[in-house]
Image (spheres, rainbow, N blue to C red):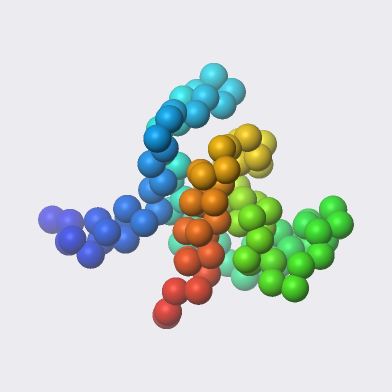
Length: 106
């Protein structure tokens, strides 16, 4: 039997969309970023280096939208292009959840 705490934790990783998004012929009504639990420090460094090579130098990269979308790309396995075409309210919801994940207490 699933606990309420586990369901609430799982739900924090599900971003429900007001309007479904179609990408490469598939329709999405939610985005599951639960793969954040599998991200490690090496992944974070890799994303920072990729962004630096592309000219994005940020003192706190984990607070930027671009960084959060790149991390979501790793967490979901969806192409970065999927995240780049999202409406602003969805992109910012992802950023908020990723940032919250990074700064939650251990």
